[in-house]
Amino acid sequence: MITQRSIEEGVAMEKGKTTPEYFEACSIIEMHDDDVRALGLVPNQLVRVTSECGSVIVKTVRGRQSLYPGLAFIPQGVWANQVVPPRTQATGEPQYSGFPVTVEPVNGERRKSALELVQGAVGMWRGDQ
Image 1: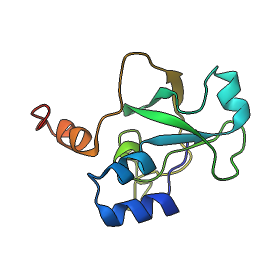
Image 2: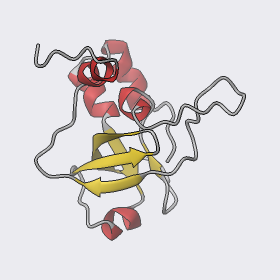
Image 3: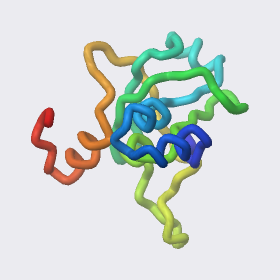
């Protein structure tokens, strides 16, 4: 998997990280069409993305950029940060690119908001506010 800035994420971030626009721009995963078919997924289906350090539920979308088979993309932000390994490899930056993940469909679960994810990560989530 890789994560990086996207145009949609940048535009939505200007409106705020708790806005519906940011949620829709960043709580997604783009994959090659062959990978989507191989996993039996359809566009807009919710999936759990899991790495060595965590997992997050995001929505599958048609790739807006060219992705090679086997490569997935989540825009940089709160959702991607749930699965980005903390290793810096002496660069001072987390390993935003080139780490393995698994992607699997989920049923009966939902995408969490940015506030839920951030507060939940530090044990501060107090439920719907």
